[in-house]
Length: 252
View 1 (cartoon, helix red, strand yellow):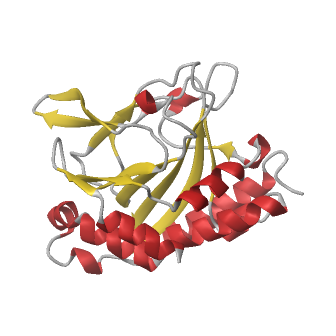
View 2 (tube, one colour):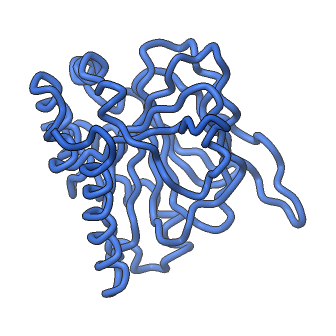
């Protein structure tokens, strides 16, 4: 099963400790699955603008430099039939308990610092989204919100021509953020993950015109402990579905 392959890839991932604890992936997906994913990339009209705190990613003409497609069954059902099957399989693997447990094991140092010795019992709700960035996209140095427990990104380029556009990790020092301590190279079938906390600072430089599209999967595990978070995560999923359905061109 794909979830088992991905969990094994996580277990075999490289561990980094500078400037913070993270893991880096090689061959996240089997080669044939990766090729099928590239061949089944959605059309531009299948994506919708990705909202969030990064308002700098709306250009003066209203163009959104990052768009997304949530990889839940209700969101991919409108894809062309020949594209649906692979994204159903990939989406299910990304949401699998097997993959989540592997990430929790691998990110134990960071998770234990934030959640304590019982970190393995903390609920985590996976939200996988396919993202596409175009010229002008950037994200300034920041820490992810504490609603999140784990952030993972799987890069989906066709070649290594955009390797320089990968995510930067920053060291947080008193009074300042040290720029560009470590960079994750954006190369085919690779990625990274880290346990979210206030001192986990990362960024991405502006995507230049030499890059046609910067495709990746963001897999975010939202903390699912307590009634408030439990309801918020599921309401958020429903809300995203409704926004996707009723956007211009969303209903078919």
